[in-house]
Image (cartoon, rainbow, N blue to C red; front, side, top):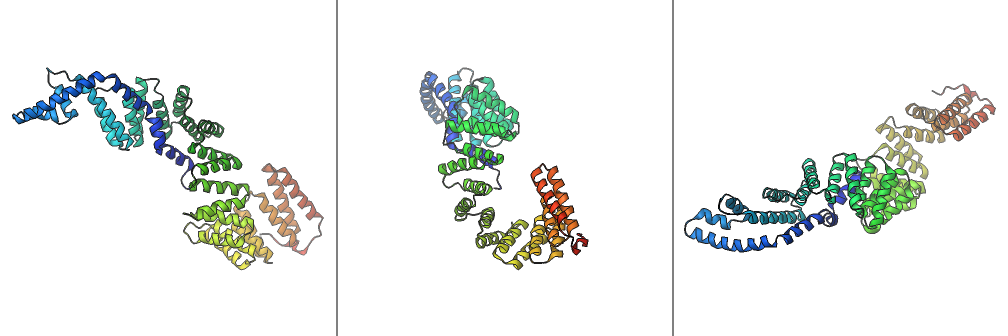
Length: 467
């Protein structure tokens, strides 16, 4: 897929209201509720005082004392600033209660994804004297959602300084650090969080992402697995563990995770697309076709048609393969490989002129595509066009001179047309490259071909140059 799976699951986790409400703001809400409960006397005082102020304000405005009247009825933020300037009035209970109101207002705006408004209300609460970890954590979340990472980091750090046991601030700071490419710092924060709250799946998911970014796939796989042990419905962990399995070539395990992802989200086209790729890589072309059928019945991509085309080709369904390749070839995303694919399917159906045309078009599209020369050379040899076939195989080797199988194939064709000396040279070169590339069994096979050619009778064609 064009959108990297790792980034998809990172964003998926951060988009989820469930995780945001249940994990990210729980500590903040508890802190606010505790402060409300512990300040009931202030609240009672505030309620009575406001009633009196409202009556005084209305009376003052009626008597012409407009400024005083406005300060009483214009709202808590305006009134606090006005009252703080009065030397004879103690505004501290009023001010503190108003700070709590701003904090609560910020919380509501955050829930509505009004992050700019949440930041403004947090600023007001801090200016009015609220100096606790929760308010900085809340403002940090709002900065984080707007990708203002430096500001978010500063607020998370301030929250941790005010309360060293504030676990969620450490988790969110770790996420922020990871998004700023400070993977080592992120791991420190994730480890610190897990030492305080080892039961939260989300922490292991993000620590798994950090290991993934470091290329430590086994550590990533272990952390995603732990997240799923704690919550077997945690879709992002299934998605990322499947990605790790794919990178390790563990396609069967990846398919198991992707199947679980589909169970949790039956309409996940991403999961079907990834599973189709895994089935194809395992050689289970029938199941790859089934997953691509599902994708193509909805909103297909070029890649869906391309993978289904190759799956049909390997199943010998050449007609269906040609139809799918034509869907791809009709788009601007067509590649030489698509033309080669259709050419091979046409050749499988016995349409040799059509196949030859496709291989030639692939070469026109990319004159340095070795596979196009390779397959055109093999087809030309089967059509009896020996000189043209050897010329194509020569081009294949010119472009990719370190591919031992290319020499082996050219040697076989040279042997068949009686060019014994050149065939033996190719077999010897293939054996040498196989040994260099740590494939001793294939090297032995190439030398057996050399020996068999040596024992064969000499042909007049042996004097023909190979180009």
